[in-house]
Image (cartoon, rainbow, N blue to C red; front, side, top):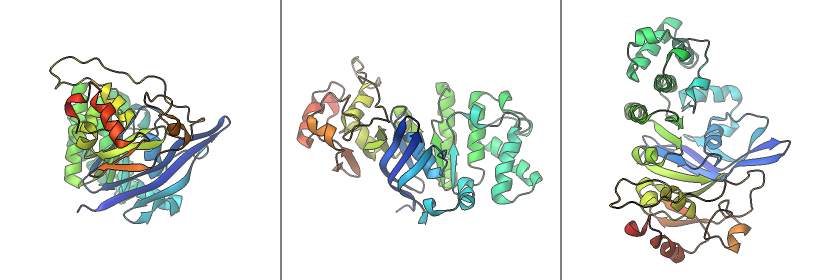
Length: 341
C-alpha cells in the first residue's frame, strides 16, 4: 500500500469581510498517497483553490482564516506549526504551481534568479550551484536552449514556457506533494498536452503525490486516479475517476458531465447546461448548496447537508435523493442511459 502523505479532515476556511462571512470551504475532507493524483473539480467559486491554499497555509489573513479542521502531512499537524516552520514545509514538502504564471513570476527578476532563490533557501546551495541546478531544471521540463533562457525575464517567455518555468520552480526541491492549480488555463490544446506530460514525467521520477485543481473534466480523466467534486465549498461526490465518470450519483456531477461533448457517441446529443448561477457564499443555504439549481430538489434538500453515502468502492456521494430513485432518474437522462451501472 502506498504511503499516505496528506490527510485533510473537516477543513473549513472562511473570509471575514465587511459584507459578511464568506464560507469558501466547509467541512472538506480528502487524502493523498505517494505517487497518486487527486483531481479536484468544480465551477469557479466552488472552493477548490481555497482548499489548496489552506493546505499550504497561504490563505491571506486577514480576511481569510482556517476556522476548523485538521491538515496532517506524514503525521505532522501543519496547523500547529509556526510560520517559520511552515516556510520550510513549503517548497521542501509541498509545492504549488499557481494558476497564472504571468502574475506568479516576478517580472523584474530573471527566471534563473527566481528558481535559484528557491534552491538556495531550501537546500542551502551556493548561488553558482543553484544557477546550475536551475539551468538543468529548465532543460528537464523541456525549455530549449536552457543555458540562454535561464537569463531571460518572464515577459520573454511564451505562456507555455512560463508554465514550464513554474513547474521547474515547484520541483526544484523534490517535494512530496505537488499542487497544480489550473495548470493548463489559457494554453492551447497542444501546449496543454505537453504540460500534462511534463507533470506526469516529474511525478513518475520523484513519486510525488499530485493534487490537480481544474474545471476541465478531460484533464482529470487523463491525469487523475481519484476525483473530488466540489460545489459551494462542499465535497458532494468523490471516488475513483472511472467510477465517478461512468457511475455518477450527484445531480451536480450529472450536470457537469452532461454539459460536455463526448467523442464516443454514435449520434449527436444536445448538450445540457446547468441552469442558474453558483450560490452566493455569503448566503449559503443550510442544506445542499446545489439545492437552488437542482431540478430534482425537494424540501429536505434545503434543510440540512446530507451525510456521505457510500455507493461503490471508495465512492461516496452527498445527496438526499434515495439511491433507487437516483438510479431511475439517471437511467432516463440521455447522456447516461447507455452507460448506467
